[in-house]
Image (cartoon, rainbow over the protein chains, first blue to last red):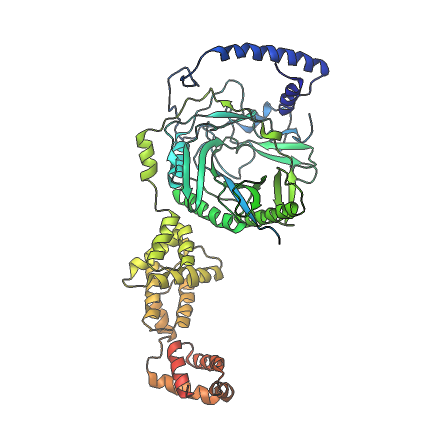
Length: 96
Length: 478
């Protein structure tokens, strides 16, 4: 089960503003997702190393050689707002 | 009877690595370029991209781990640290939360808990309002810095005062600088230091509530900030009020501490393993290379210098700056029998001061060869010229690169070796200065200074101070 307070907390961390209706819906939906995942907890994993990857690869490293970067205009073309060659975003202090 | 308190301080130091490219993409690293000219789909977090870790960043990190006397991990993995803030377009930072590359180290008196690799955030400039976060209405984001390889070094809480933090911080900076893996320039942010500060009754082993001081850009400011915070916490506790866990900013211009709103309240970072990166298992060759490539580090160098007689202060000054240490060793190598203590004092004292005086010359550009300075030190040591005359010669050497023996000959600075000649000057000085002479005779030995000065003036500094003193005392009947 997930509590309403946890939904609000996660929404706050993600700067999401939720309506009362959405809070109710999400509390129910997230609960059923977590319940589903909890099924996994029934498996006995005593002595099993945690798996972080299914492919047995290691040491995939890149040489420290510069590659071309994007033109600034191209990079900024994806931004909703830009100013002086920088991405402009709402102040992080403005509350969601 | 008031309780004595002791401060307990732990540090988190972020070091930007001086690789050519970013941690997970091939964008070039540079400082001071126009905004957003070093970005790509990876460091802008466009959909569908994958990170590719920089091998050199790993090698640099392992060197830092080795220099801090850490155990180097045989298994490295990466995790996502989730936070929503405009300086990080993925909304998570890739870091090593579980399996860092180095653990259990020590530098000087301070234990290292661990060191891990991560990526730096972008630079944000808050516009409108008073500049620093509070009251701003929009932010401008420059992603040039975003994705720079960072090593975070976390100490155990083994420090106890602002001064100790400054001294240890300087040792750490010199040590990393010596490795050549970072610019360690605090003003440019390539070395940043956060401090966790708490106080407790002296002798107690419990830890009090800590506050965190963020991102101070010089060790002097850190020292002052920490001392201000220790004083603030003591005042709170003595007034019976609790210390609240919070993040503080120290304003060096006013000496005041301000509470900062943290990026993420409650530090709820919801770490999870980074599925886009496979583990890094350093090969024995990589580990050996990290350990075997270590140069002589500042702490060891300072100890070696002190062993050959150099004063502690000069030993530290020389060890923290590689070019000064190399210069000093050049002086020792140039002349057999030169006293290391004396040579170190000339290098860190007279030479350093003279370079500063003459247009702030950097050591790297000085016209004074180590061998020439060795010759000058020899002339003074052999009493061919006085110490004062030596300084005059050095001034000329710094200005023109002249040979010391030539300067001595041209300016006629040879010490008066004929004691008969010096004796005449001494007798004359006593006659010309009846007042101090009388004072000395009647027991005021300090007055002899005026007579020494008179002799030095008459000889233009060419007399040996000890000899002048001896002759004066003899003729004044002491």
